[in-house]
Amino acid sequence: MDAYECLLTRRSIRSFTDKKVSDDLVQKILTAGMYAPSARNERPWHFIVIRDRNTFEKIMSYHPYAQMLKSADVLIAVVAEPPGEENKGYCVVDCSAATENILLAAHALGLGSVWLGVYPREERMAKLSEILNLPENIIPISLVAIGYKAIQPTQPERFDLSKIHYEKW
Image (cartoon, rainbow, N blue to C red; front, side, top):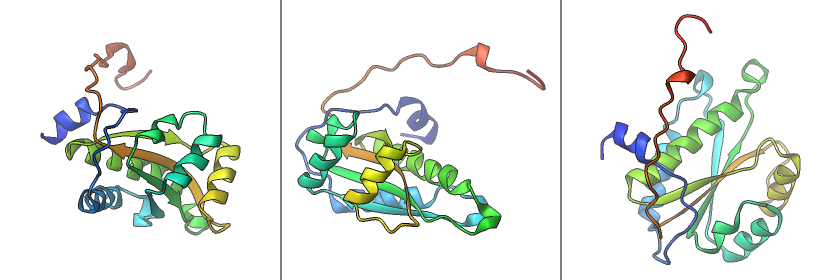
């Protein structure tokens, strides 16, 4: 699949088979995350690879949209280590770009994935920080559930000419 096709055909997958995702594929996905653009090349991201079913259960107990973890094989937490004052605030944007790269890489490798929002929900951030034992300065940004697709979603039309403006609004 070429890059353009990957962009247009990626879908959020919330139902997975019981087939295991290899460590090699997880590393490829993480590599893609690390190749995301970042402000001033700070690369504030860290990734926590989670396969422990008990951790999945803890996350499902507080996160209202995490029920797909019942069938997901891997969960990647994308967290930020904020850089200095000169680059303040960009770590969230940078980690969001890394999250998108992870989603696209999973799709390109034949896997399904879905982004679970964490940031900026304070209650989700606090609970995930507790579960993952994050240092105080680390900001949880997102979770990505990954596995082999149990379903093949349809391709909706999303191009909307009314969203395009030239030169000015």
